[in-house]
Length: 220
Image (cartoon, rainbow, N blue to C red; front, top):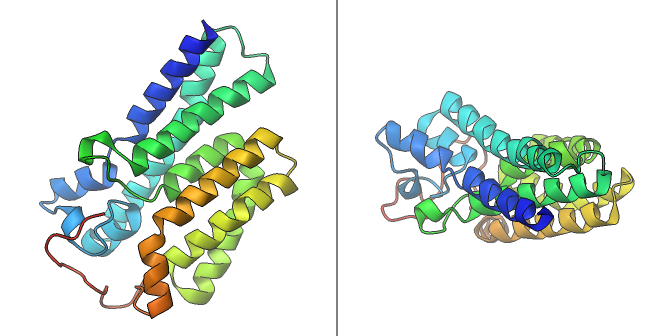
């Protein structure tokens, strides 16, 4: 029965994470977010293309997807299976639900398995798994962004710091390994941003023009 619970947690977590909130909100405004700016469906590109309110709404929605999958969905199945009092089993339910939501966001089945970078969704998962580590990497994000004005560089820096923050806050070995995997996935999804950073063509938030903006056919 427990195996079925884990399978259902993974499926529901993926479907929850796969909701392409940025794409749907932009489409409601008559914009295909995949063809403007960086082509990414995440909050940063929505903010640049449509405006701050839309970007903040997508950020919160993507964050909520991760938290719901790792906290609410996982907790419900743990309770249903009578494992609510077993901390280790509950943790594994949260890991399965959270990772599935991140993969759903990054590789959504509704957009031919192309999605966002998973930073906001990962943050929601971390709130459920390791809230103190999330606070630590959020501080890293804020400092790097304040110094550079690069959202991508701040996200990459926070991702690299994540497993160390999990270790420093005395997370379990399983969670430390999972956060290392989350960090690797996030950095890998920032491959194009890393290339632009190295070439000096990456967009700084607040600058007037995004390199390559409004180029037809740009995809995530």
